[in-house]
Amino acid sequence: MTTPPAIRLTELTKTYGRITAVDAVDLTIAPGEVVALLGPNGAGKSTTIDLALGLARPTAGTAELYGATPREAIAAGRVGAMLQGGALLPTTTVAQSVALVASVHRHPLSIAEALERARCTEIANQRVSKLSGGQMQRARFAVAVVSNPDLLLLDEPTAAMDVEARRVFWQSMAEFTAAGRTVVFATHYLDEADAYADRIIMLAAGRVVADGSPGEVKSIVSGRRIRLALGRPWTPALGAELAALPGVRSVENRGEYVTLVSGAPDAALRRLLAEHPDAHDIEVASHSMDDAFLALTAASPDDPATPENPADPARADATTEPIGARS
Image (cartoon, rainbow, N blue to C red; front, side, top):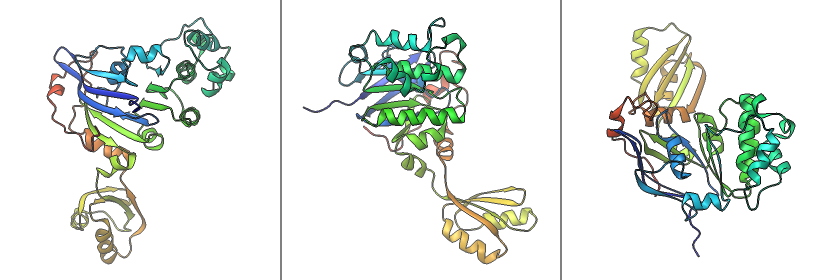
């Protein structure tokens, strides 16, 4: 028997009046994948997660989890979720909140194990109303994993966490996924997607504009960055000279350093050194996830188009085509 995908979205669409928040999204996510959803505010990340969980009704299309409806998959205990708006009872302790959710599932983790996985053992007896923002996120994670789900959907899971708390969170997440569980997380932190996801799905104006490994997504932005110090004053003539190097698409001067972006970095660097032998502190680097993100979403309006901010109906008419989209 063929194992059904963890998530299958087919022509999934959600509109709010004239605003299209999710626009005919087709996605298949296999069991065991760790997938990041990236996109600017209003790209449709949270709405896509809500539709996949059955928390919102699609205008068109379908969502299936393990071959079942979202409601059926959740009732079977196969799905856990950590949502931005997920509230815990303020008068309960963290352990009580976890126990409450565990009580409605058939095969939950022990309360102690869920707390340990979420690094919540030391705050188990604290009341929810007394938690800091980062502690609240960890408590939500404990609630999400206590059902021992096969699929975990996370919406901005490390929001309000400091750098160390984010590191600890992803360490615990790596332990959770080591057994082959599926994780889909929406994030604004591009470094998280680059470091922890097997696959990145980038959304803009409710559509998939890129789908691939972190390396594949970054490769969409061709060329290399060359950063160096020339040891001579900056002049417009020098800028024009550098712009004429092979494949150079942009030249930026900041203090004593110059950054070039070139589609032919080897040829550009050879000529640069021949014409400027005094160049030093040279660094050549690939483009970052930030570069790919900006390139792929540049055509999208800056203002989010959501039910809370429906001021930009033109988003529904965007014509960005997906790059590397998977069926």
